[in-house]
Length: 131
Ligand SMILES: CC(C)(COP(=O)(O)OP(=O)(O)OC[C@H]1O[C@@H](n2cnc3c(N)ncnc32)[C@H](O)[C@@H]1OP(=O)(O)O)[C@@H](O)C(=O)NCCC(=O)NCCS
Picture 1: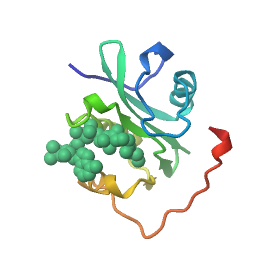
Picture 2: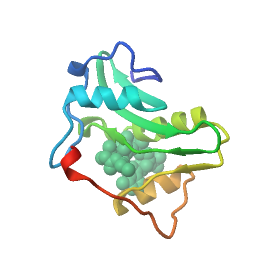
Picture 3: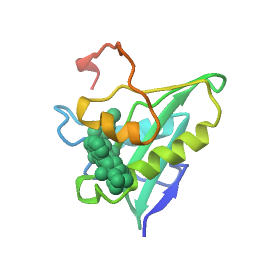
């Protein structure tokens, strides 16, 4: 049974295994925990003690939010967990005017099913030395 929680308090780095698949320099579990604590909103999916999925948002609390990270560990993908994480995060964000994210082409369909729309352009910087 998957449990969804909105507070990372009590989660330890040892519960954060298997994330950042394919990243050239994946953040350590300790940094992952800092990321979870640093977001304005977070939803975690847990199977017992293990965290098997997470999504974060950063919001000004007035009109806008950005969703930087969403991931379900590979062995738990395809069970509806990613969609449930996004639905619960959007419910937390409530009626904000803008909720934005950038993603790869292969997940556009996933987000469209959840009601998000493709924009013409997303712009960004990547400081790869910061990882
Ligand atoms: C994208 C991701 C979070 C999806 O999580 P998941 O738990 O496997 O997805 P779900 O099982 O909740 O899928 C929900 C629905 O979306 C569909 N779906 C899943 N991935 C999809 C994709 N890449 N494109 C289109 N539809 C997709 C599923 O078939 C499912 O459809 P259904 O409701 O008809 O059954 C997961 O594949 C992942 O962690 N990928 C690696 C990290 C990543 O790409 N994160 C997004 C960064 S912006």
